[in-house]
Length: 141
Image 1 (cartoon, rainbow, N blue to C red):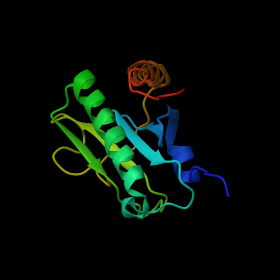
Image 2 (image 1 turned 30 degrees about the vertical axis):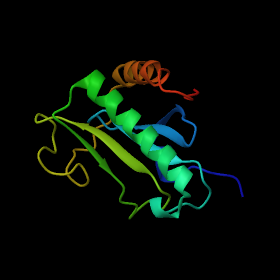
Image 3 (image 1 turned 90 degrees about the horizontal axis):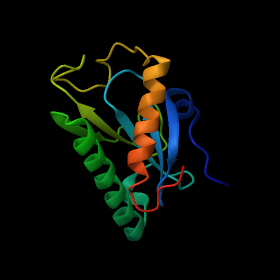
């Protein structure tokens, strides 16, 4: 069976492109920027289920995305986490957090207002992030 993105991720996110291992998504909600990496491995639920080489590749991609968020948005903190309680497909959140965001200092899960970014701001952020992701080795739109 070929890799398929979970329907909830398709609904809640915009696909920015692919790194060598992971699909890169952006949450539509007006917080962050909030990116998600989804390893393109069928039926994958946990990081420790990947091969050692895949784990190393994932850490490289995760670190590059975190660095991109830090360099371009100057957040107060970057939250990285994998829960998977509602979406069992392995997906790892990378969230630029600010002391001024609606969930600070708590976790974003269950603490945001659910407001979707306005379309013009959404489009601008997508273009900016894709432009910055282009600098990461192996990124393809």
